[in-house]
Image 1 (cartoon, rainbow, N blue to C red):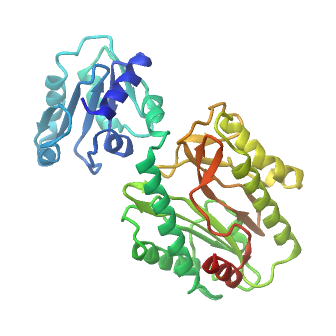
Image 2 (cartoon, helix red, strand yellow):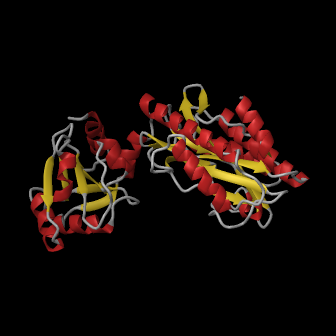
Image 3 (cartoon, rainbow, N blue to C red):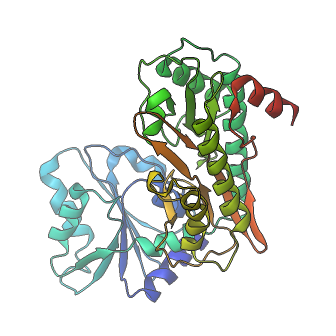
Amino acid sequence: MDKQIEALADQLAQRDLDWMALNPGPSLRYLTGLSFHLMERPVVVLVGSSGRVKVILPELERAKVAQLPFDAEIIPFGDDPATWQGIFESALSEISGKALRVGVEPTGLRFLELDLLRNALPEAEFVVGSAAVAGLRMRKGAEELKAMRQAAIIAQNALLNTLETVKPGQSELHISAELMVQLFRAGSEAELPFAPIVSTGPNTANPHASPRNRALQEGDMLLIDWGASFAGYFSDITRTFFCGEPNEEMKQIAALVEKANAAARLGGKAGMPAGEVDRLARGVIAEGGYGEYFTHRTGHGLGMEAHEPPYVFQANPLILEPGMVFTIEPGIYLPGKYGVRIEDDVVVESDGLRSLTDLPREVMRLEEFLAVARKG
């Protein structure tokens, strides 16, 4: 049995789950190496607590499962949707009628596949089974960490090359388009973790702003949140810049966010609840008088998805373990004025957190940032 399948089977047994039903996506790719596009035809892979695997997929995708590194029952079907329910019922007939517990990822399994499974397994209980997979994916191995470091390097090189071209008068969309080109030139895979966020002036006060036609102006803040992909793993970084001379409030909130980032990045460690990392960052901003303007969690897990466990919010009791990777991204957002966010990707090690990202964190004028980054 493949080690990933065996590990999931163990997790299912521990959690009293008989099967796990997976759609195409990161978890399926992590466990089996299989990549499918989500389309109008159903695709579902079922992994049992015994280690059995059933793959129900369109006939046109059959070549992808010709050389699986583990034993699996392959059930292909044709293009006529009227036959699909019958295929599912036939594939699952030996376990139909049993009071099974089937785990699903609520953000992953589509209604299309869920409805076919429910009709084929009328006595089964479908429950949230995300933790069974998350428990495996959260702790990254050496090769995964190597890929994530490379994704960070690619993203950082792309940003520096982009900043060389940035000047007042360019729109957020223009800067974002240049960054996309530079990401691919620097070696990113085609699937980015997300479309880059490039915001200027008052738009920087929106944490998830979409690039618009607003032009960068002297006296603006410029915020860029971007990432790259390498070997199926992502990076996710944010840096903020001054365009021209900042005012005193800009400098004040920038210094606070940098301090909050450092507090969490240097204070986190294995054995600590994830919520404590959030408190380390949030405490700095609250003490500085801007607590109400830090409107999101301090970070989120990162890997084959841009957002995955562990999530770094104040009430999370999850104990950090070596190999976990997450972002540290405190921010201050003053509506209608400007905002600052500084985001790094870190991996938990026995003696602390090691940053996979190493661009300068201080908020500086664009030309100063470039000089420091190129020198370092």
